[in-house]
Length: 159
Image (cartoon, rainbow, N blue to C red; front, side, top):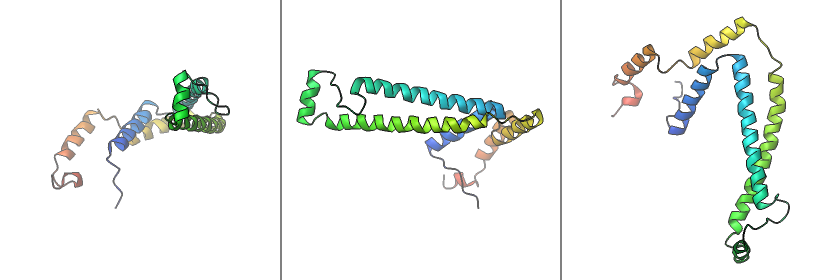
């Protein structure tokens, strides 16, 4: 018996986004470009946030520069230490993320070496339509309505 997909809100949101990305980018070339753009945007944003944190809190190697004299008092009393530690840990994590993203970028460059003929691209589009059919397609809406009216389906038991 096949395992049912998870129905939690996070998984449902993932499934919708997954299907949308397939529907809107159904060719190899579009998927290559989409993934490259997503990787670059992630690197840009994570890198810029790291730069901002380093400006505000130091580069992580030296003691952080306090923003105000009250920061010295808070740190001396121990009130600001957990937050400072959390910021320093976040900065270290962002540095690791950026290093991993750089490695992924190096691997992804190889993906762009691949070119396929138009018949293969057409197969991509056909399979994409099967994997992620348009949820607003009239036939799909009718089928969903019929399925939700069927009382013997597993998700309608006891309710």
